[in-house]
Structures are given as structure tokens and as C-alpha cells.
Amino acid sequence: MPAEPTIFATSGGFSSSGRGPIAWRRGPLIDYALHLSGVERPRICYLATAQGDSPLYVAAFYNAFAGSTDAVASHLALYPMPSAEDPRAHLLAQDVIWVGGGSVANLLALWRVHGLDVVFREAWERGIVLAGVSAGSICWHVGGTTDSFGPELRLVDNGLGLLPFANGVHYDAEDQRRPLLQSLVASGALPTAHATDDGVGLVYRGTELVDVVSDRPDAAAYKVEADGAGGVTETVLRPRLLTG
Image 1: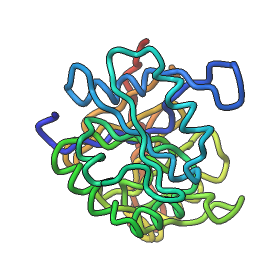
Image 2: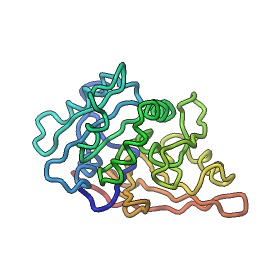
Image 3: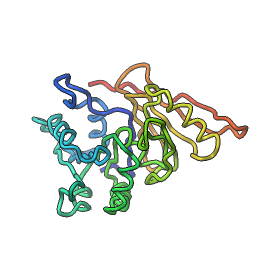
Image 4: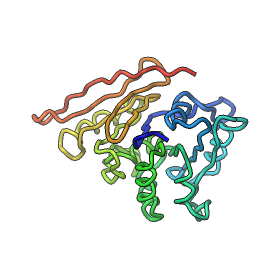
């Protein structure tokens, strides 16, 4: 296990294999999440809560790990009831927890109904790597911007708050993301934010951002801070390029 609590918050993860609409293969960000565990054969658990525990996404996850000998894959679903008899015990037995994208608002609500907000803090404090893409990135932070409520992006500010920052995802891919995040930080509705272009991941040890990585060139992360004059300062954080 890592010596410190670790979060890997990304705007990417699995790559499409090209064989179907939800056909995944492991990408560099997934492999890096496994690496962060510091375990030779890490146990990785997937949560598709933000997609309503869609069986298609769960199957895609298992297909991506089919034949793998360097990791042990499992999942935890909450619909129509928890798929594990003891969800807490299942999650705390993992080395990496990967949370998929979708509705962060629904994800947070359902997690709290099942008490997983408390479990995730316990897992984080134990050094289990908490990771994920999009909704699975925002959830560990104070909040960010979301399309959970419709096509017009809105504020979400009830994240788990393990990290004292806001989070912006798909920063280069969706036109509304950058201006809304900047306006929310400028107004004080959100604290200082870290944002990621598609393919970029943020590594936190404890609550400190210690590394930025990417699975593609010409992508970046950003620190967005209120400038005290009604605007923001945006600092580019250049990532290390992962290979594989």
C-alpha cells in the first residue's frame, strides 16, 4: 500500500478497442492507477454507480481485464441491491478503486444512502488508491461542474471533500467546462480548482498535488485560482507523458 492516502483523478482511463460501442481495453492511465498501489498484483474494484450500474459498462470492465495476470478485477454494484454481501469489507479489501463517469450528482446521493461516503474516507486513510474518470474524478473533491441535471452545465458542490479543491474535467473537450469553472472559482462558489484535459490525470498524496500525467501529447492540467479582483488566474500544469 502507499504510505499516504492516494487519489488519482482523471479525464481518461480505458480506451476503446474499436470492436463496439462499449468495448474497452486498458490504457496507460489504468495501468498507472495499478502502479500507484505499489502492489505486484493489485486488486482493482470498479464502480459504475454514475451509469446506474449498467451491465454493459461492468462487462466492458471485465473484458478489459480478461486474461490479465497482473491484477485481480472485481466490481461493486448498488442496483437493485449491493452486489457484495458486505460492501465495506469488499472495498477495504482492494488496492485500487476505479469509479467510472456519468452522473456525479446521482453517484454522490446513492453513495451516501449506502454509507459509502464514510467507507471511502476509511479506504483513503488506509492508503487504498481512489481513482476514476469524470464523475469518478470530481467526486473526491469539493465539487466542480456537471451535466448531471441536463445539457447546460451546473455547479455541484457536495463532493466527498477528501481533497480541498474543486475539479474540472474534460477541460479541452466540452465548451462549457472552462468558462463555468472559472466563473465559479472567481465568485467563490468553488475553491481553487485543478482541471484536466482529456487524457490527463492528477496524482494526490494526502491533499497535495504531487504529479500530473497524460496518455497523449499536447494535453495539460490547470490550476484555477481567484485573483481577488473578480477574475481568475489559470496556470498550466504540464504533465508527464505515459507510455504503454
